[in-house]
Length: 252
Image 1 (cartoon, rainbow, N blue to C red):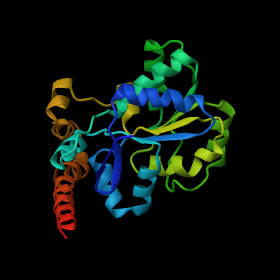
Image 2 (cartoon, helix red, strand yellow):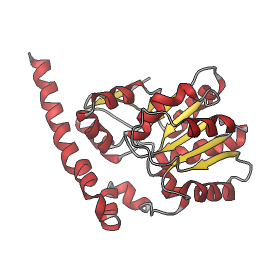
Image 3 (cartoon, one colour):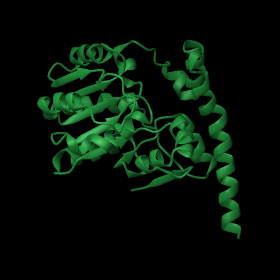
């Protein structure tokens, strides 16, 4: 599989359709699988959290969710295709409806998962949503919540979407997936629930094509300015330093 390394994190150069083909294989075999959807903020966080970096590299697939990763790959002389987490989540739900695999929606604020369920079932009426909840407050993603695990196990989903926010959701999946035997595929999806539910505005397509999602979010969600700063200032600086160090190491 073609991978691009950015700041020590391996990102898969796959199209949405190629990811879906992998997902079909995952759902057909006997193993459990894990997908992550990194953006620049993930990679900045991974520089300070080695365990998080290890988990990102442990995942079966890491797709480039943010346009910043596409630009970083180009700057590093490589090609990377973008697969937005929202588009991937929707496509996996379409696949689940077609194949009869059940899904469980875990995360986001109270009632957002339920609102997402309504939106999904409006468009995908045969989709089997066997659970939709916030999961409560996750302080330590390594700690077991036996009641939560029991609810998921009772529902026996095949696909688990987890929206606890970056770092927490990936760690939670890593530490708990083996305790959820029915789950064949788990995927960390960040703010996807809010976008599909309609509780957050997704930038128009032309904004996304221009790579100005950060500006759109800064206007509509100014309280996220620290995260946006990491994505549009800190991340490019780290990538530039990474490129300089890589050149020096090759020349010595």
